[in-house]
Amino acid sequence: MQQLIERFRNLSSAQQLAIGGSAAVLLILLITAVAVAGGGDEPVAVTTTTTSTTVPAESTTTSTAPESTTTTTTEPAPVGETWPLTGIVDPEAVPTSPILVAKIDNSSSSRPQTGLGPADMVVEVLVEGGVARFLAFYQSAIPDEIGPIRSTREVDPPLIAPFDVVFAYSGGIPANVEAVRAVAIDAGQPSLGTAYSRDPDRPAPYDLMLNPAAALDLAGPTSGDIWFRFEEEAPAGQQALTVEIELSPILDLTYRWSSIDQGFLRFHGETAHVDDTGKQLVASNVVVLAVEQFDSGRTDGAGSPVPDYRVTGTGTAFVFRDGVAIAGTWERGSQDGFFRLLDEAGQPIPLAPGNVWIELMPTGRTVGWQ
Image (tube, rainbow, N blue to C red; front, side, top):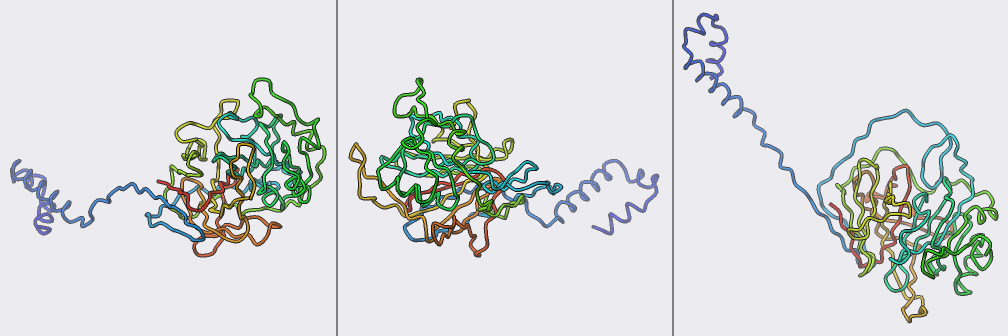
């Protein structure tokens, strides 16, 4: 067939015409058929993979979904200092600026929250009854008001200990308050009542609001340490455009990647999580840490057991950034340091420069993505 093709091509225009229209058409069809048949490659099948992982106690589970990569365009390196909690390089950054941590409620009665969007880092932790509260860390941007502020729990002091923070909360049992004072500057309502006010448009006890500027009057400089590895380019990982996290039987979270926002939009189930301005919360990084939950030995006023968590040692970790998932482990030797995120080869997992949402997920719960 190749010889026929070559002979036809070598004919003069008049000779080609002499072959006849129908014969020429037939020859063209034969050429096309041979060209198509000679390709040798089958079309690539496009598949959608859903990965769901339940993390048992004291185990690390990885999934086998196909890997995908995200490519980024190299930009000129920004100039300035780096904000420690976000990895963002900013000409106006002061890495040793004070850090404020506010204990914010996340029950349905507390939504929409005020001042949650500007937080550099948010740690979500279950409390009694299957609902959650936030430890919201502020350094690079300080809102005018934050709330609703709620009481501290046993897990808070170990989580805030490395950062030299000012801690705002509504109160707590004496043992927890003493533990807070051992690791942070106490800006709780019992100690600094002038920094707090009640919002008449919110029902109690979801009405306590913080003036962060008043709390930061107590603060001094911080170490300026950068707590995670941050890199612009995403590592290889599995596609994760939608992430679903089961924190408790009554609290299911969804994060959906938005190329417009360059982050994961946050939902409670299918309901968008918005702040009091109506803007949906978005996370550059979602970090899920599987941690052991145990009974603190006390109950709340309704008789519900108050949980506590082991936040040192090691466990399973999942990092979601740039629409991909990276599975690995977390390590933390003591409360003097923070969580180290390692991939399956034991190398640090880089986060995207931007805000970080950390979900402390009890072992035995499920995280899935697709």
